[in-house]
Amino acid sequence: MRILLVEDDPELADSLTRALKAAGWTVDTLHDGVAADLALRSEDYALAILDVGLPRLDGFDVLRQLRERGQTLAVLMLTARSEVNDRVRGLNLGADDYLAKPFELSELEARAKALLRRSLMGGERQQHCGPLIYDLNDRRFSLDGQPLQLPSREHAVLEAMIARPGRVMSKDQLAGKVFGLDQDANPEAIEIYISRLRRKLDGSPVRIVTFRGLGYLLEAAT
Image (cartoon, rainbow, N blue to C red; front, top):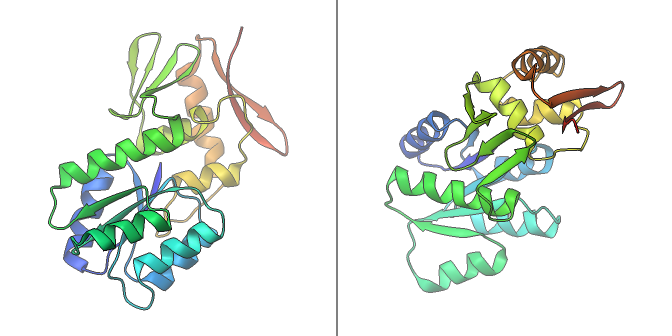
């Protein structure tokens, strides 16, 4: 799952980025509001974590423009401001949650998980495709009741697909979930990850079907 983190304090941004990546997310880190607005217009994110006090364009304006475009991704606002009016303003503009500095990294991670669970899964903790289960809290897969250990990019591909079972996802869509802005997003590499996932799902009723020219679909055979 891909997250956008926008924080202008380099030291805090670095520590947050490392913590979020250690939790298994793909993280793009930016430091000003204009860059954030451009990224949100062009990239595919499941969650944006926005500091309010950003240079060039503050977090409130980034959020306002995001919602005016009709984008519905979850947004967590970070702020050194604890005033009720600021929190109310952010929530009225469409923020999903608000976290005042200073905060513990464990709280940020817990809030991010809760927002993703609510926005992507309607509040449910688990996603299912036949005997393949994904637990969003633990960010772990199991197949037929046994843990399914996956390298990070295979995990990201399967995570994107189980969120949309029965729907075709193109290589470009999957690449957008797997690669960050600082990485070479190669849609052709998706074929390699799909091939590896197929081998790991072999023998189960869960399969990845190819639709030539369109992409891939995750389904459980009946």
